[in-house]
Image 1 (spheres, rainbow, N blue to C red):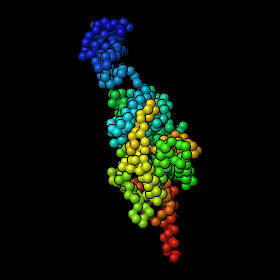
Image 2 (image 1 turned 45 degrees about the horizontal axis):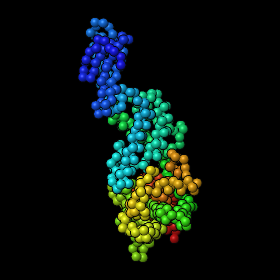
Image 3 (image 1 turned 90 degrees about the vertical axis):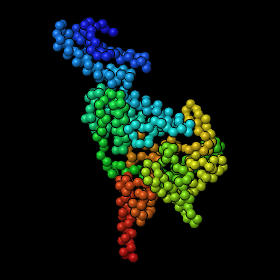
Image 4 (image 1 turned 120 degrees about the vertical axis):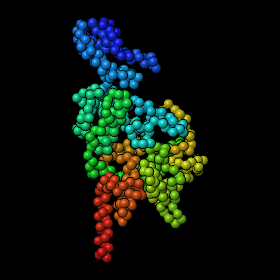
Amino acid sequence: MPKLTHEETIDQGLKIGVHKNGVWYARIYAYDPTTGKDPTQYKSTKIKYEDGRTANKNKARRIALQLAEEAKARINNSENPFKTYTAKEIANEWCNLVCKLAKENDERIAANKKPIHEIYGGKSGSYWGGHRIHHVLRINEILGDFWDSLRTKNIEKVTQKDLNSFIDWVKKDYDFSPSYQTRMITQIRMIWRYAFEKDLVSFIPSPKRPAENLKVSSRRDLQPEEYERMLNYAKERAEKEGTAISRRDKYLQFYCWLVILGSTGTRPPSSLKNAILWEQYQPPEEGEELGYLTRREKNPKPYTTIVLPEGVKAFETLQDLYRKRGISKTKYVFAHTTDREDSAGASGYVKGEAIITFKKQFETMLNRLGLSSPIGAPQKDRLSPYTLRGRFITYCMENFPQIRTEEIAEMTGTSVRMLEQTYFDHSTKRTAGRIAQIIKGKTE
């Protein structure tokens, strides 16, 4: 450390003195007793020493106090309170933290405990988990190029105007859907909130968001032949001789998952709290073909959808499977049929515990059937588990034009606006279908 002359204490943990180069320096103490680290630093005030001039010393004092005040908030909050951080460094630091929190949540869930790390700045009641990390890391990789494009790398000097440039920047090289662009903007806000808590920035931004386009944001239709290929894919593997019983069970459950989502329109469960439960299912009354499924999901108000005949059969298939495996009392419609111990690559589980999602199996299936799309592809061009919900809604719209859109919206726990926006073409077709029925009724 440099030796100062004319040294003087001007506040607790703060001294000023003259460096050998003839400039006033501030010595800011930053010892952290909890870690034993001492990143104490000497910072130049850039004021040239003038012997005997009180005004000269007072000017150096004021600047030293300002430098100390800036560092004070970061002491104990960052490894080096004097370091200048780039936006990319803080984004990577946030990413590493999120991965750690997700892992801890997944370990708690595997041990039948509730997750504790909520998504700060996200929807209330949502938690970090392994299923979210893939997108977090992918978005962080793309944002790395955005941070490099900014006029300044120093996160403290990045402005709201700088962040507003994201939409124009991302459109130059990527063809992401508006919803995926919005997801990326949400991650920028989360990173900035993290920086705000570390006293590195003074605001939480609201970057300009993409304009919605009804046609662009409509979902990709699942063609009947594609749905049939999916069902055959799962069914063939469930019936394949020589395959371990546990794997055959999983494929049979995956098959039933495809059928149930495609014949009820329920949203694909993504966490334990919105898993499909047996108590939510009501089988058909005697002489009837349709069952009922009551779901809450993200809505405060539950909704009840119908279960088409093929869905009823899938529920019966699962009940029969669970009787054979001795877990008929499980409360989960999709439950593990065997035990598995923890391993280096995955958490274990116990018979009867919930299977949260079949998303990985769905993605593997798309790859093997040649139906996958690049990550970030527009919503209108890609298939996802939500496509199965769309299959049911489309089926109702095309085959029952006499049913009002309001009734389909209520039955699937959504709004008329969302249906008309997401299923743009089918909304027009069903209106035409109702008009045709009215005309036909007048001519008969």
